[in-house]
Length: 267
Image (cartoon, rainbow, N blue to C red; front, side):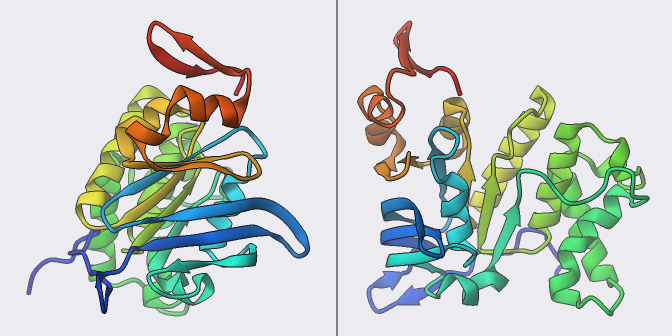
């Protein structure tokens, strides 16, 4: 029997016209209750690719991620995840929030935090098996923290904690990974570790949505970009979508040209 892996072989949902995209936004209007936050989102993300969500604070990036979790209202249009409504597809999604609810003073180890990602598969009333511990150990190794498994979670730096939370999500072996500002405030070592782990997840067939203010991260991790500021200003390949013209429309005067590179200032 092959050893369990944190990143399983890709499973592709097939339809009558071939493989189905992992996530599809079809002219989606999104919000909470009767309040509309984001309008006109249209595009799709295939397995093995990443989509960067780019826009200023309050643009609707978190709302778009929550719509893929079934936690935001779809007022019109549709959102589908793995061919299903988002709420029905939750067993196939993993989420890494901006700030975790774990109290840094709570006496829990890094390894225990990562094992929490296996509870959906194991059940809350059952103990993790050897199979689950191997998957958790591999996930922790993937983010470069295998040697910190026994350390208390609260003793880690902010960037290291973010890597642990990604490892926890990896153990869920989800087809879709949703990350809300995972690179905010992380150090260079953690940044590189997160980028490497996300690239490996894509090679394993996962689809990734990641919100970020950093255009360099988008270029390092993602094949596509969605530009947002209350509505969609572009959705497609980086080279044709992440342009100074589109960024200026999305951000306004905050977009600058410096030595031939596009810089978004003030975010």
